[in-house]
Image (cartoon, helix red, strand yellow):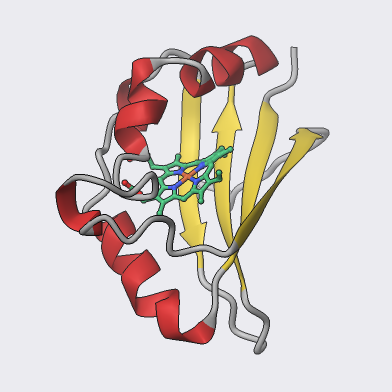
Length: 112
Ligand code: HEM
């Protein structure tokens, strides 16, 4: 079974970029312990667009779904949800989001 890649595309207004990155620096770090989790990257746009990518890779669709409907996801989005913690009740730093799903067809790293 190929791994699946789930990319959350966050639209972030210029004045919220710093805040978004600050929230990710203080992220819960729970995704790392979720079953079937393989990789995470926060990708900052370099070409003048306002879209950050949250790249995640999972062993299977089911593993992703389990994380997304569980407590680790909730805890991992406490700030984005606003209310408590470092979010100071401001709500999300992003003004929009979209979820992209892919299957890994090929992957490679450098030769050892
Ligand atoms: C409703 C849309 C979403 C928004 C606005 C959003 C925003 C954020 C923000 C600001 C954080 C930093 C931590 C915090 O806020 O407490 C975060 C964490 C994270 N987000 Fe999202 N997110 C959304 C949905 C998703 C989805 C669908 C995925 C699936 C790829 C995802 C993947 C992650 C991951 C892996 C973390 C780190 C969690 C951890 O450290 O345990 N997010 N998100």
